[in-house]
Image (tube, rainbow, N blue to C red; front, side, top):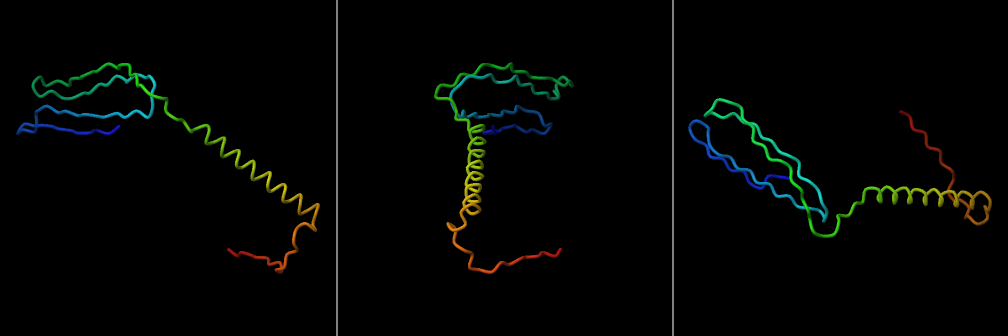
Length: 116
């Protein structure tokens, strides 16, 4: 939610109306409620701090519900990780139990030592 436009009238004594407009765009259909809003300001005329209030109101949006990919993304990630572990286990079993199925390593073994 971002302000679309803000306009204020400035005079010598910094008094004047101020208008802010906000455009809300729904991601999908559904129902909800806008929360109450209150704005406090100092009124130069009365010398008091005043509060403007707007009560919340119900919102109904026509259309299909918004897609939520939260839990589905985690399940896909876990599923992919599980498939990777199964593939690694199968490769380990094939290499260990059936060494003739895997080609011999043609390059010599190289040990790398990192000195920090």
